[in-house]
Each structure stands twice: as C-alpha cells, then as structure tokens.
Image 1 (cartoon, rainbow, N blue to C red):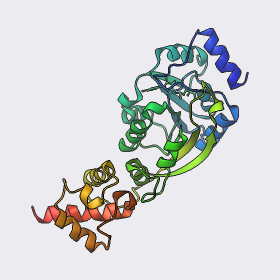
Image 2 (image 1 turned 90 degrees about the vertical axis):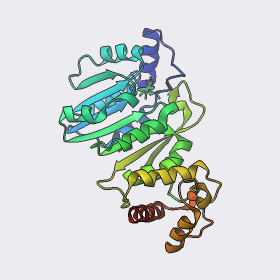
Image 3 (image 1 turned 90 degrees about the horizontal axis):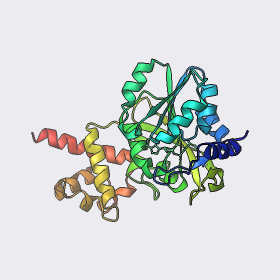
Image 4 (image 1 turned 60 degrees about the horizontal axis):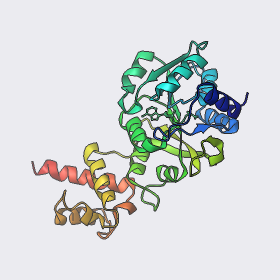
Length: 284
Ligand code: SAM
C-alpha cells in the first residue's frame, strides 16, 4: 500500500476524522516522505525523536532506517493505532504527551545513543514554541528536520538583518545552520492545509555563531527590537536602556542611530549587547 492508501485505510478502520485543533494534516506523498528521510541522513546509530507521528506514515520509514524511534504524540486516538501498527518493531516507543512538556534532555540521556536526530511534520499551530524549545533546551542533537508552513519557513531560514527575518531567525542562526530542503504542495496532505509547506533542516552548531557575554540580555534586546519593529532600534529599546547610553554604543560601533532592529545583523546585536553588558559591569 502507498501512504495515501494506508492513510485512507487507517482512517476508515478506526472511524477517525482529523482534528483541526491538533493541526492534523496527514502526509500522503511517498516522494515527500522519502525526501524528508533522505535529508535527515538517518543511520542505524541514530536515535530519532519524532514529534507528532499521527497515523505513523513517516514513522514507518524512520523505523526502517534508525536504531530507535521515540515518537511523542498528544492525541490518544493515534497512540492506539501506533501501538497496533508497530507492535512488531522492537525499536519503536511512543509517548503520549504534549511535546512542550516533555523533558527531552532526560529522555535522550536515558537512551545512551551516539547520535540523536529530530524529525517531524509539525503541528503548525505550535511551530514557534516547539522550535524555540528544541533550540533553547540545548539538546545534544545533530539535526532537526521539520515540515513547517512555507511562509514560516521563509522566516526561519532568512538571513538576519534582512526583510523576512523575525526574532526567531536570530535564535535559529545563533544555535544552528538552517537550509531549505523541499517545497511541499498542499495536495500532499489529507486534509489539505490552506497553504503550501516546506521541509527545512537545522544543523545544530557546536558553538553559537557569535560570542555573547550575556545570552539572556542578547535575546531580550532582540525581542524588544522586534516587538516594535517599525520603530528605530534606539526608540524600541529605550524602556530598557537610557537613550544617550545607547546612542554612544551605536556610535562606537559605527551603526546609524536611525537603524531599525530588523536591519541589525546577529553580529551587530552581539556587539551591542556585549557593550551594554560591559557598561553594566563597570557601573556595578
Ligand atoms: N506525522 C504525521 C504525518 O506526517 O502524517 C502527522 C503530522 S500532523 C501535521 C501533526 C501531529 O502532531 C498530529 O498527529 C497531532 O495529533 C500531533 N500533535 C499536535 N499537538 C501536539 C503536541 N502538543 N504534542 C505532540 N503532538 C502533537
């Protein structure tokens, strides 16, 4: 059976309809599934963590390639199906939980695997919190290969300081190297989402791409700048820092004081926050 036939068969067998609330759009395109698995370059050394396995279409291919697959799914109805479908696979575990509440660090430690990869056709309603969690948890993973909405993919893979970037672009760039893998039309899913999708891959860096003296301050400044992205950077961050101090810092760094935060590169954000940090330390 191909993945379209399998999906239709399972939906009928278990009298299921996709839950809109849980972002259920099941992948039914074998070429796309093969593309995701190929891009993730899974080997028999790898522990794969799959977020939102749904009916298990992608999971099936992951199980053939990986040492072990741990799938995390919120929908109880899917758990029964997955347990039944993969009962003969000794390398499959499913956890019924909200991905945002799972202690992934602990989960990975318990498995003692040489290499860990995350693969998912993400539920779109929580793409940003999931991506931020995966990055901020600083997990020992090699790569994150995910399907997201196409327009979200454009933001995630944009260059910092350019038009399509958002605050999340800086977090992505800080922790990883992002690349586009393939564009996926809405007809590759049941039910069809309203927009096209994109598979992207984040390759986790050994060290962040810029040296930052205070990470919390660095991300706080980026957040402030993007909360009011139409304002100049100077005005956007004025609640956090005296205007004259910030003017001096920008002058020192030869940055135009009328620049908007969205036009600052990640290197410039790092330089600015490092100078704020040093001033704070000096004045203590
Ligand atoms: N992987 C399947 C596929 O490609 O056909 C299903 C993908 S579907 C876009 C997203 C999946 O994530 C659904 O199975 C949904 O139930 C699950 N999901 C939604 N919210 C979740 C959460 N907070 N934690 C874990 N899984 C979740």
